[in-house]
Image 1 (spheres, rainbow, N blue to C red):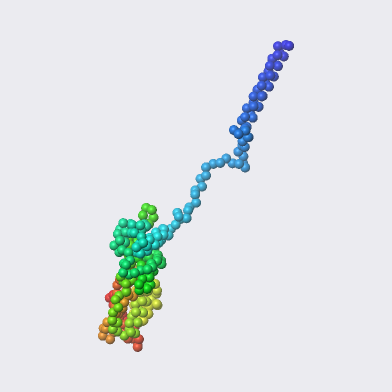
Image 2 (tube, one colour; image 1 turned 45 degrees about the horizontal axis):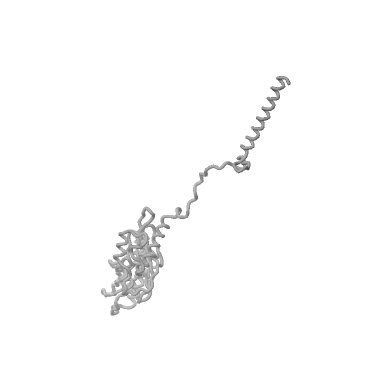
Length: 288
């Protein structure tokens, strides 16, 4: 064999070996570690990237400050009802500041002499810092209502109870000792009582001037000319006439009505006179 033929044969052999090596490398590169071919990214299978979409806002985060304050006030009121009955210690009242807890302890739970058999929360009304809690109770005298005033303040975690004005238990629960029927015409007493009840509804923002009863047109016009400004904390209260006493003043009668709305006890003084054959309230005294 010539030298040229030998060189050509060796070149062909080298080429065959190179092709074999390339073939083996290609098969290994196209296989996954488990022996299966990996699919290349395509338009139908895009490469995964990090999402930049923010999480949706939760309901709690979207709650309004008023709703959060109402939740705190209602939770405290439920616990306060248990405290008033002696079923919960003051140090377990929720969201209660040290100052508020001291006020609760000072007013104390319901006295045993009242013999309260039932007490339940009826309603919590108000807004933001000022709230009123109304409770229905059953005692030895029957059914009644008491209320408590709550003052909230913002804290780092939301809202907290900063002040608590407990119910005026002596005025609202324990009725006055029966006494001799005070003097005065029954019709004058009825007119004074109806007027005071309607006047309280008007002054607390529960009714308009047209709801006033048993008064002269001139007094109605005077009251309509100076309507009361009633903040939410006062509007949430429910006043009632605890007692009414008449005293003679010439041909007229002065009616002194003792009123309580829970936190406050005061007098409404009116003057009742005969107007065209009817007993009507002709004026308000300095207590009105």
